[in-house]
Every structure is written in C-alpha cells, then in structure tokens.
Length: 218
Image (cartoon, rainbow, N blue to C red; front, side):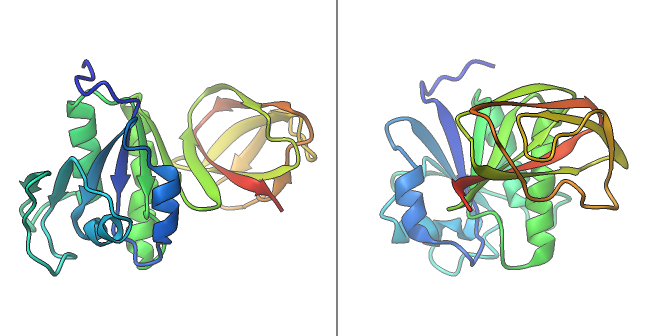
C-alpha cells in the first residue's frame, strides 16, 4: 500500500506511566514523522507540546475530554480481542507505513509491556519494520536473515530467542561471538554482549529473536 502522507516513519505513542516526556521531543521530528496516539498516550504528547495526526483508543486510560480539532479520532469498542497498540499498528499499515516506532511502550503493568513486545512479532509477520524506542534502547524482533550492524563499536546489545523455542544464531564482530548457536528461549545466554567492530553481523539461521541495542556505551 502506498504511503500517501509522504513522511518517513509512523510514530505510535503508547500510554506507559514510565515515560520521560523530554525524549519525545528529541525523538519525534514533526516534519518527517506521522504521529498516532494510543489512548492515554495523549498525556505524554500534551506534556511534550505535540499533537497526533490520529488518536485511537477505547479511552479507558484517558481521563480527560476526547476532543481534538487537529487529530482524527478513532473510537474502539472496549470489549475487543486486541490492544489499542495493535489497532494503531493496523492503522499505520492501512496508511501505507512500513517503518513504525513505538514510544512510551515499556514500564507500568507487566502485561501491557509484554503485549507491546509481542507487537514486534506482529509487525514482523507483516513485513513491517517495527521497533520500540526508549531513551536508552532500541528493540526489534528479527527473523531469518543476515543483519549488518554499523557504527555501534563499544555498545552493548542482547539477543533472545523470541516467539519460538530455539533460534539458530551467529555473531561476527562481537566480544562473545557465536557460530550456529542454538539459543533457547528458556535460557538468557544472549544478554549483554558488546560490539567490537564498526561493522558487525548478526545472522539468524532459523527462528526469531528479540534484539536489544543500547544507544550509549555502558
């Protein structure tokens, strides 16, 4: 589907209570980003002085008036089988966006955090580039393939089998390299590795993984 809005990326702002609003101002470029707000994420946008293009939710986590002169409002039935975030991703896909970033998606209730992490797999199944971005990390789900990681030397990363029992993984350019390692979802061996080269490679030979990249050296 063609992206008719001529913007590079769709930002979805979620409603996590653990959200540093200042990072929204740094992360969002209103000239390049299309903004969708998930329900109570509006409080974060308002605090950052930003207005969404679309506001979606059943409004159970928003306690103010549901009104906006500048945003399209989409009301959802509160008795539904998915989440507000999934509805936002579906809207972004409907509008033609392939690159989607979730902000304010982690923290607060653990079930909401896990549901938002599962959205990464939901996007992967639809060939969408979906990430969760926090002030310090970027999180993605990766499927079978070879991924070139550039300009991250000295930074920490973690990889976990995700959405499968085991994943066959190799690393090049990492402090702790792997070669066709059968990574189990039940054992977090992939935590806290370090890129040692400006060009590193992560290969997923089978399965799917959760990839966490720290933005800064630790």
